[in-house]
Image 1 (cartoon, rainbow over the protein chains, first blue to last red):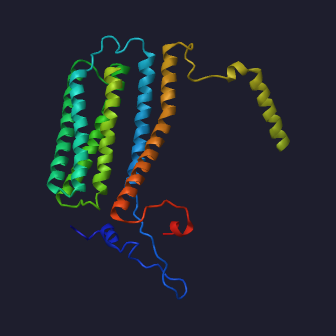
Image 2 (cartoon, rainbow over the protein chains, first blue to last red):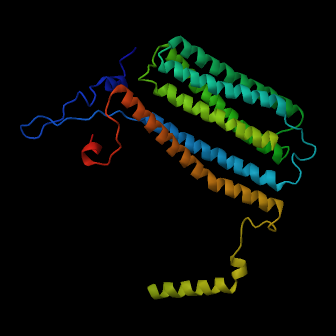
Image 3 (cartoon, one colour):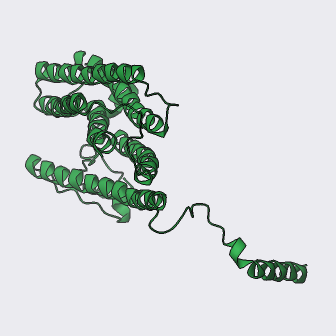
Length: 219
Length: 93
């Protein structure tokens, strides 16, 4: 395991239990209780990021609700219907990727390096499959005449689903970085912040999808 | 100076009250209460009002869950239970 970075040096520094508190006067230093942080700064930062992302998607869903409830006929006439069946299967694929991500975290906690790599690879494969199927469906919809400028229906569809797709793509890039670090054996039971934050983002993106699927495809 | 400002404010208020119907313009008053567009706006507003509470509740729930998990982990490891405290000697660490 490389030990060159400043963060590693800080990690290896003596803990508060070992460190001596400066004594007051000539007496012995007072005892120090061990303190284990409940989370890292990166964890807190990711929580903030996810909060902001949730509000961003809430804004988009709010706009969708205005037009969806405001329209008496939905989808509008002469507009293609969305592929609910294929996207339903795609939803299951994405949900499965959340399970494999969770298993990857569990494998790391148990110190099973090979299983960690396998589960991360499965997560990436499922994520790529989801994006490929989505892309294929988009191409078909474009051929049927559903474009961003064809109607409010098309505009809302591509905005909501497109932003989610972009988030899955971003999560895949993050996952690739985590996969490369995991291959170098950088994650241990104590040092798993990168893996943990990536899994938080991944699960957020996965959890968001059934809401969008229900609203845009089924409602 | 203050007297002049007060007079301007009184004049403005009087003018607004005289034309109350026009000054109460609403940007999203699109139709009657049962109009579908109004219903859409209402649903959207309610949803957007509820979302921040949901987000904050999720964050607090996550923190409570993580804190409890850390407590259990510490107990298992035989360490002293983690205490979130505002005592001065603890917060200075």
